[in-house]
Length: 434
Image (cartoon, rainbow, N blue to C red; front, top):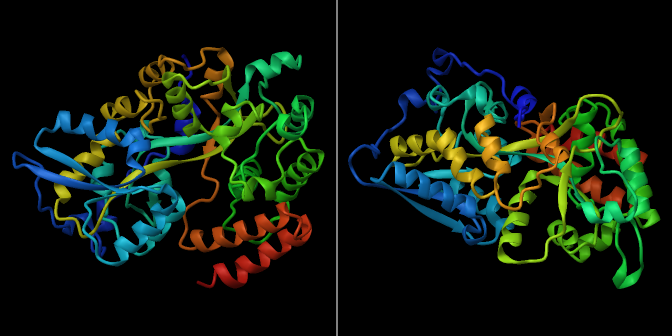
């Protein structure tokens, strides 16, 4: 692949040469950290918070690779079996003074909370040791000039599609669609009724799949409540698709807890806009003999045709608990996770690593079961990847308001215009005042 996520790196990474002097005197400066637990010759056990360890193989792949390179350091997962409970558990752990060494940072919303409370160690010195120009998503972790986490994987939204259904409908592969063309294809791909209903598309219930995408493709920031009217077109399109029966009804999808992987894998939906994290389970199921359709990925549809491919995405990373007793070893692990060796470990199981190079991309598309068509490879190189909601001190509170109003709009509890006005009002009066 000659164009290995070039612009992803450009968009997600800004050369981040922080002046160390700028961090001096910080109450959480790494210059003053307690570097007990050397990670040198002494045997050390590092504890790392994870979710659903048995079903999230990237952790084991990364931990095993690190241990092989550092035999004196053993990784002990601190597992939260239900992934949906992970954020709440970690919040409680950190607030209670827990000393788990490394915290896996699942999303940027939670990261903003950890960073604003200075519950994680300043990692500016570690950031200087990693290949910053190759790490997509690195800048998303720069909070008021300080890195409290570094990424090991970076996902972004693409359009998964069922090649067989497109061929049977006489449609061209969805190469560089606009959202209007996406809606048109969805209508043509919808068929059947009742238990035999096949939807042209499945759009999961997350507010980011409407608000976040509209924000990045309109070059807006969801943290700014001055005018959310730019979200109206995306909402109107989704509601029109829902009313026509070309995507599942939001209320039914929520109450029935529809899973995007199942909807796509079982052929209940021909297209699914989703993060690249869906690739790994599709490959894993295929390897296990589960029936998986002939699938490919295309670029996320755009508002206008002919422009750059702009999509939303963000990193998953690791931070060091301020109460860790093994900070030196923990820094060594985080540096490894962000390195080419760490990237090879997670890419080997279908996870998109933050570290990007043509060699890693070649390795990734060499996995058994990966689509080999040109469109899938082109979709892996969007022009720009932006976080759907950048990190700020109020990110979590704003996200709560946006999600609440999203549910009301999608279920018909409010009109689009009323919902957007209420978002502006509540974010200003509630979220920004916290």
